[in-house]
Length: 230
Image 1: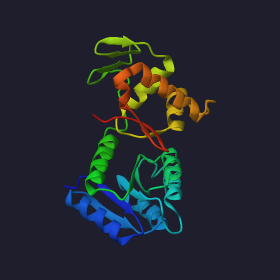
Image 2: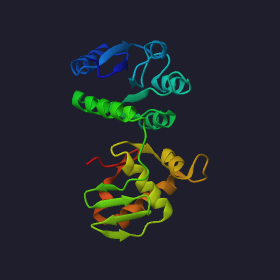
Image 3: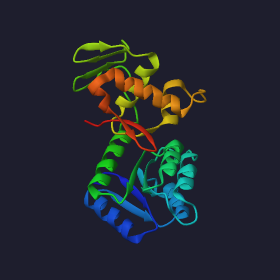
Image 4: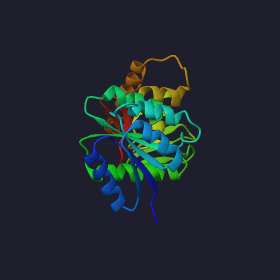
């Protein structure tokens, strides 16, 4: 029985074959598309659970493919993992803001790709729902959303409302990278008048208050922030 249906989009045959081989070996049903145009068509006809999408494609590039799929009610729920070359940080940010779920930088390890795919599909199967009521416990850190309380080794630390929401938002989905705009939207709602710099200031203050546990909030250079996966 297939673990899931995956569409790979890349114009490099060796990359397509590498990904196809490793995913097929793990029990996934895999189809391939060599261009953005074909990818959009196959996404609509094959209804894959996940798409591994290269950003640099001839004709319609990966960002445009992502934009089209996320604006189409029939394909918007498909999980998208982007493949990007080093130096494409701005495109990664744009892709995440368009609705892509994760990204992997070339060259990549097949083991890393498989791990990301498994995590993404597991997240999708759970309906992308996060528990907003249960206390999160990460080693010595505990985050209680009911009490709006954060403790480290049992001692409470004083956080502002925004700092608490930022920490809770990241900690709910460890390992996932969020852009500054996504963080602002999650904490304040769409069109809230704050700058990217304000998010950086909040993170600096939060890390300082968390002491050694501040290491859990990781900076992803050129993209945003994530909570360390333990």
